[in-house]
Image 1 (cartoon, rainbow, N blue to C red):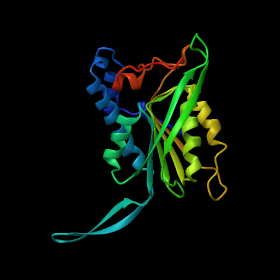
Image 2 (cartoon, one colour; image 1 turned 90 degrees about the vertical axis):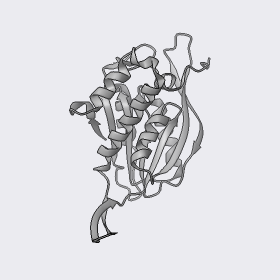
Image 3 (cartoon, rainbow, N blue to C red; image 1 turned 180 degrees about the horizontal axis):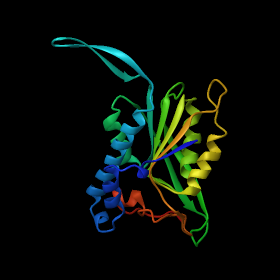
Image 4 (spheres, rainbow, N blue to C red; image 1 turned 60 degrees about the vertical axis):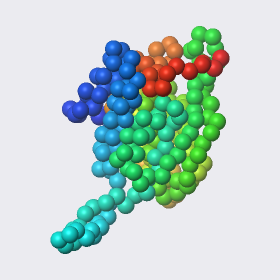
Length: 230
């Protein structure tokens, strides 16, 4: 699995990340959602450089022009609910993509909130056969939600390649995805190309399995607090 850490490049992503992490800005949900969306737009542009392209002839008012357009068919998938603003950012850039949605959420299995399981209850997706699957979810912590999401989506076919896109990733989640990627094969029997994109890779997880320094609960900051499952 290839891992691309966009924070190693100087770009406007740094400004968006500074505002996302700043607790003073986080009281403004609109600004928080907009920054998640803008990161999705930038990441979609960077990812587009990895797609396959074909030439297309376009009639202009003065003649014919040759342009390169994507040849890949994309399926843009997200994890509800935190992934929605990032999903919209990707869709702004790849407006012809098909879409898929998965519910995956944490359940703490002890009172100390140190043991975590993941439940996946709903999935809506087109066929993935021969397509490029792009899965967006702002936070990659333990990696359990992303693993459950991938396994659910892959029941709908075998894509040509997989791109996993997040805002903040922890080494623990990256390692789980690396191990998972080693088990995935394409329709030709060869290893599945898997790429992880992150706007930042942080130090690790705390005792409650949250990313440190991270930015908090992305879903709550985007949409408000929710009742916690016991």
